[in-house]
Picture (tube, rainbow, N blue to C red):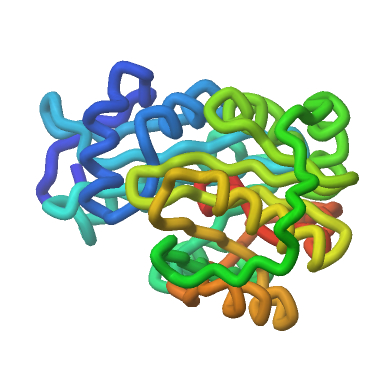
Length: 275
């Protein structure tokens, strides 16, 4: 019981997705039932806080071997600021007491995580594009492919990302074909509010831009999210394409991971829920 609320905590199950969707819709988040299924299918520790038969809060933790990714920390608006999310997070921290934990927090959430021993790594920004915006295409000759060698791609992603998120990317590839150009690749997925572009890995800005342009022009979606690390030249390209900067995220970790991946090649992450 916290703040006079009698609630229980149990494992978050596939059968809970419908209720969990109500939480992320109320928060204005982008996840779909397919995203929840993808996350809950991943090796990890996923919890729900219950008041009677109602899910009032969730947390997911994805075990990427080299570290554990914390995601989907959501609380029903009627039960916020009562310590429920903190209780869930402390249970996950106890479950993984000997592991490095990482996450992407909102600016408001970062202060809470800092109190629990998380420290800042770096900053990211969400960029939003509405397809009605005029898109400046620099190369009409689309050389991208949607038939990648997935095993080779997943092996490369582990080195670039710094953790093994193969199950997540395999699930994403079944929902929406990844795109490749030379050694670069882009995953995306259609969300509740927008199509999420990323992860996007490339050796140079020009290739990254070509993949983004191809993704947008091929898509039927009307709005796109792209979450990326602070990178002035890349941000200039996004502005040229018609994206507008939206919210800010803080990447944080508890414990010290030796390999945080090769950020300079990551032109978009997969979203704060999967890294």
